Image (cartoon, rainbow, N blue to C red):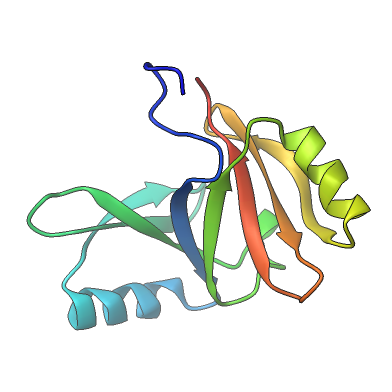
Length: 129
């Protein structure tokens, strides 16, 4: 692994929960787990970075099921690092998986959502270097 890189292929980098009632679910996890949150403006509404106490580090996202996220299932979705988004997408299809969300840009990198042959969904993400 490149010493400047903070990620490596196969590492779980992030997790999101995308739901219709993000505000209510945010409040649920704040009460049950004790997370704080940092709102992120999504252009007319906020999604939330959930923050662990006392470290203050972001640990997850709770997002509204709107716009490009409208079709995501209401379950915790992990994002796994890959070196090459296009190659991983092609291999997914060749191995019997599906592209639930096609590759697109996000936060300086690229990501997409797959459904594996068993029906499980996860995100694959190539972070910026």
